[in-house]
Length: 302
Image (cartoon, rainbow, N blue to C red; front, side):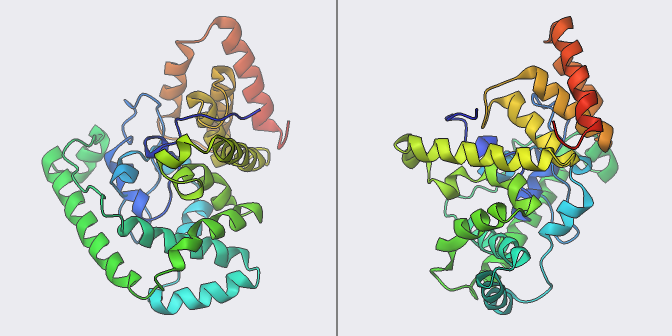
């Protein structure tokens, strides 16, 4: 059963898929040298990957995020001040897509308005592949990304002026309702938002029951997506088992779920990641993991 863990800080945000979180994908764990070997989330058509505590902690790679999930992050090309009331009315009427989009809008504003958001990318990692593709030095690439982030944040802050001051208080509500309603994106993204659902680290420290409930809900959401055979769900659940974030660490299941995800949908760097994981497993564990992976890859539910 999932259990409570203190590892739910922004350091462990693995699936942040909102536009803000997407600047980090190119900056942080895009390299397969990452200890967790996580692919970083893909860059959406209308925004670069993101940074801050939230930017640098992003870890899942563009190939691990399918088209449907990228599409789920796209918002109508309408000014926020006009989009917000429309989404709010639809969400209140029970529209699941509107609930997800309303969460995305409010969360972007929430992140943009954080007074302690650091946009210093100087210590960020960039994979050699990305540098080669960009034709830039690491310093040039990071400087461009930092400028893009600053510009994006300035634009977002201006757009967010059209959102009522008290609207951000409902950010958690819409994420919860979208996840409970069965929205795939919300279910996979939920476990990145302990700070939103429970509160900051001080509040988490005195809210053991709330953290426990958050972990249980997060695990339930991800497992429900993985059980359908969805590659993103399989990969994300493998990450949870690998890190012991919302469930006890289980290297056999971590390997199996990530391997099954790659078999259902090729994931850049996944084979190397699996090789690294295998090095710390016994022959018996590896056999068990491969058997489970084969079952997961063929079955929609176990």
